[in-house]
Length: 245
Image 1 (cartoon, rainbow, N blue to C red):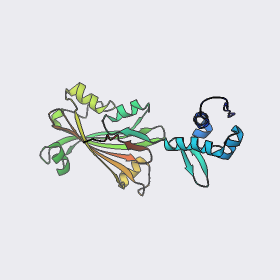
Image 2 (image 1 turned 90 degrees about the vertical axis):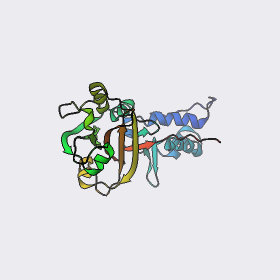
Image 3 (image 1 turned 180 degrees about the horizontal axis):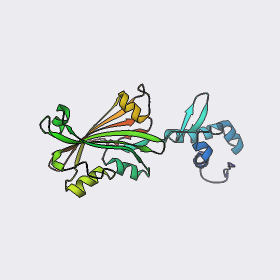
Image 4 (image 1 turned 30 degrees about the vertical axis):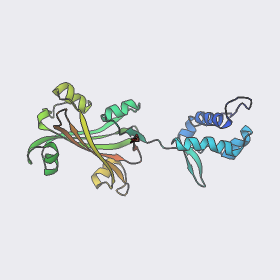
């Protein structure tokens, strides 16, 4: 790709450079990790100052499209999957909204006895039988999240339900229970061996643990879910609006 800018154009030079670099990084070789041309080389090629090129590239670094490594160079950043926290949706909805084709690497369903932790969240007696649903999901590059869900017996879910479908779709359409509220807690943890093995990472690599407690409109518990996310593949963002007094 031959880089060219229009010095007679009224558009500021740094914006023209930014546009050119956006096109440049779409090329397959840069998507595969090849370093971008040096800033000084781009500046010389375009007949502009290096500071102008740096301003444009810095904008793309801030956006998370590029990453700089001192002594190495600039390349396309590894793209994390980011989800907003001011509203919640199912994993399938999150992936569909971002146009990501996900893969179910593993789906396991079984009836288990509720331990104290699960019984407390679902507001049932300890020892009650509940449905436990485990799902390992990811994309073509491999798994990046492992979900373990315990479902309230009131829902009526069984091992015969088709859990390749979105869970909340099954609950609402097949069992006539509306999913209304999710209370969540997210923290960084060290994975246990079985989790790191499933996510294909080292036990020394931190992961995101997302605890989700889901309720119906009457604030009755429906699901207790723990999700284990690869931290290098998933991130969360939140919009916080300032309150004025």
